[in-house]
Length: 135
Image 1: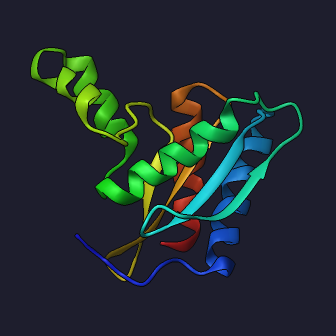
Image 2 (image 1 turned 90 degrees about the vertical axis):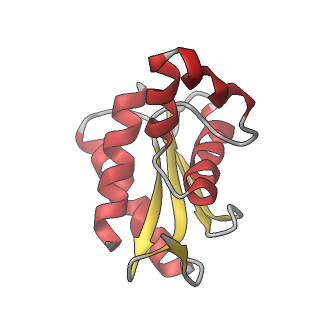
Image 3 (image 1 turned 45 degrees about the vertical axis):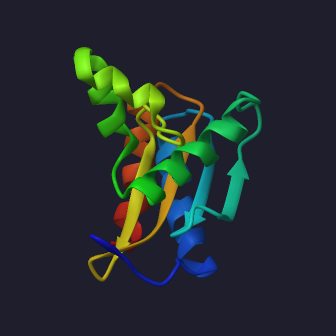
């Protein structure tokens, strides 16, 4: 996978809107961040009553997914395996919690989305809804 041009604001808003539609459909509260291919913030939204820490966590998940070109769940799975998988703790910027996905357009990574506020599986489910909106 290679990097493409960074996600536009318009597409970032589409990702966030689709992610938050999935959040609302399930009556959850979350924060969503969309970053460009460099991991820099393009769009952020936090629902009322979302845990305060989710503001930072969703951005870190999005950045991790974009910079490492993989879902943050991949790091979570490494950690779960133990042994050599524990090395994920030493990878600066790798977030080992589901909820961050790279955003692909035209076969290239153009950014990342991260959600936080639910369980890691819920965060991942809502991130996927966002990515699916532009893929």
